[in-house]
Length: 133
Image (cartoon, rainbow, N blue to C red; front, side, top):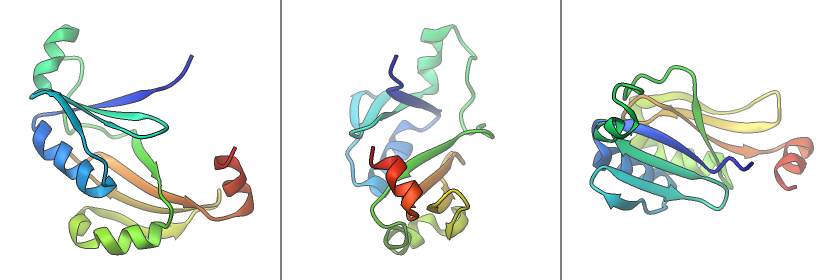
């Protein structure tokens, strides 16, 4: 088995796609007006419209109602990313870059649907080794 994707359901696919393109620099491939994907070398972030829920039987997910998951992106320099995105993030900032006890330097903010997003850089030898395997 291989974990390959996570999907966000949103009422505004274009807005969320533009946001993730802006913060990652990776284009979102739009397959329909209701579904697109941002592909990285490790995983894919899918963005689906609320209209796609009908294909799964109806009210199985609610947009902008996530209170448990954090989307995490490993970046080369989290402090440089914070400097680049500070104005974009604005009041959506949850935590400025901070080194966490497990060895990652982490920037936490919310996307336009209030999903938590973590940009992180491994900074301790153990964290670096974990992600370089």
